[in-house]
Length: 93
Image (tube, rainbow, N blue to C red; front, side):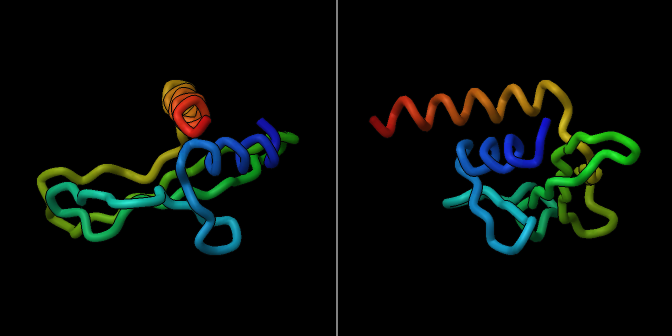
């Protein structure tokens, strides 16, 4: 995926760019147990390749029962973002 494609995917799926290179979900967000901030997303260059990936950073208090880890979005996550973008585009007509 190119940097432009990743940028368009995040913006098209209801995310906003709140800082240079940082994106978060727009609107209301309900925090999970132990979570103290909504996740943010960053477009990162893949080392040694001319390709980009979307990295998700989550924020949980230490010692929480549910403690997700920071991760690169999988293909399933990217497909889910693409479906969200299609849904948003269809409903905004």
